[in-house]
Length: 324
Image (cartoon, rainbow, N blue to C red; front, side, top):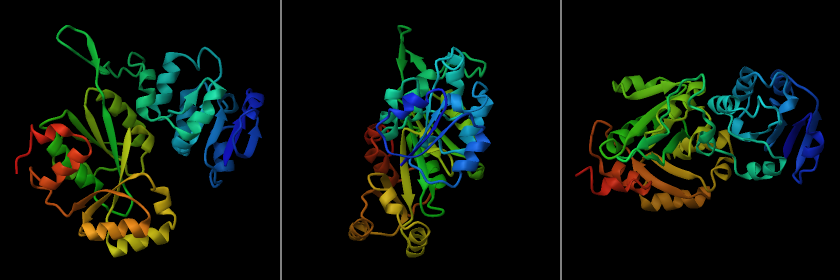
């Protein structure tokens, strides 16, 4: 069920043919919304931007993004010149707000198809006061721009300490001979222990800036931790399939595998053989994309890591890199 927060566009939003559990009308501060919905269960929240006090101030919108899961928020913009300016839209993207639209008719689509960064990257005005530099294109020899098809792959530990940080470190080492690759961790500083200055750490507020500043990279690997999944074009969910880890996971959230249905699940630090993986799939009602055993992260060439990357579609590794 969905929530509607409306003001100027109350009548328009009232025409939507969607399931609504609660509607409030008026002007509200971000803290008002936190107080009302901080512990309230809902599927998506549709917000008429004029219902947010001082919405013209991007710092207010930043406060909104810090207090809510932005992949669950859809913002209907008003028709004011400021809100529709390239500067304002660029700032929305920069603070992690991707699900916005000028048309009420687009709201039902966003309910089922929330935007990722790639869907709104064109709004990132790289000539604004953020001075992020125009790196959205590379140049061919005839000086014609060619857009890079960038993949931003997020890694999320489903079981505790499932190994996302170390796995990203190994993936980057294997990819960098054939691809232009960047690795980023959010809200953590574990990368510093690898003694690799190309690995970058940031809080989630700066993550979208870093991704935009590396738009010439073909792939960006993101250790999400508790950061927003919406900054990624795809997510890999890591599970360490030990008995204690799995039992703890189930007791914490009995519906976890319902939530992961049709997601890309990877078993990491796994001791399961193919028969065990089949049993795991049957018992959990899920599908395993790949099974990665315990690996030595000091190795530059690891067959299993390369097989995993090829399964993800990095076909250059077949011929250009990694001889075993």
